Length: 391
Image (cartoon, rainbow, N blue to C red; front, side):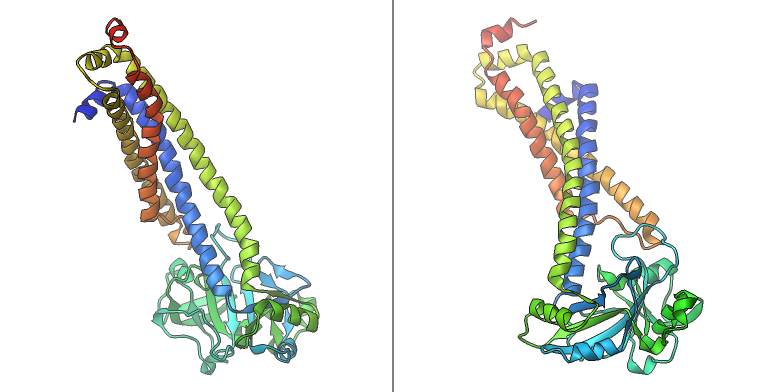
């Protein structure tokens, strides 16, 4: 209570100082939450691409995340490579012809595959919030399983109809969130995906392609004990015009960019905090200058230097704690508002965790204490007689 009364004697200055670091803590919470979301997506992607090899046409793409078509005959060649346990051809194409809102991760995709083609080798398990998975019996029908983000974006539930590229598809399943590619996917039977893909191609290419022979990606599952990196090199050497990506390739490509982005985000927040820390130093220095006689009295009646330092550091740490609490509240409001605004489009940009909140409070408190230490040490070294004469 004594410390709070000391802070209350300088309401304007204390308020300005609190606002200064509050903005820094707010920046730490907001940018830290964005970094959490990015790291969660990267972690999900690492799990998704682990223990498998993803093949695509090395000549280019149809734009963005959709690879150029390959012949299904390529899958037969890949199966003949030593060390390959199973090959699952698939089709991927953008759900929207034009890019929509900014998203974290891949854009909304239509994906098609043959049910059971992995022969039980797939280790990334999908859980269903509603309905079921696609089966071999679904081939030839227009049914779909929606990722969590797609279902939320279009407000679809089991039994609803979603129009994909002009064709109606009945929803038979909705996935639980995975924090990776399936969240943004509308999964359909292979034949339907092939038909939709060919319909999006330019007329000059469409007439030369047989829909039932088209794939844009192939997932290769290695046999037990086979080194994935070695197998990927073996496939690229054996199969022409094919690019192989392993889980390590994904981590290398995405990990470096993620680390750089995280550094930028956290760096911005730390600069804001540094500015706030300087405001605490200024506040404590001015406070000590105004309370020189008071400090002199305390020293004259036997107050030790450690006690003086402890009181003033506690005061500055309390300022930092208050700033931390305000910063978390303000940051949480911004994060929740931004996520709610983007929820309908599946654009969830922030992930505010308990760890981020605790870190913000601890960081604000420690920053306040450290910023107040030097002025407190100076105050403790004041000569009592000189301090009592101070006007």
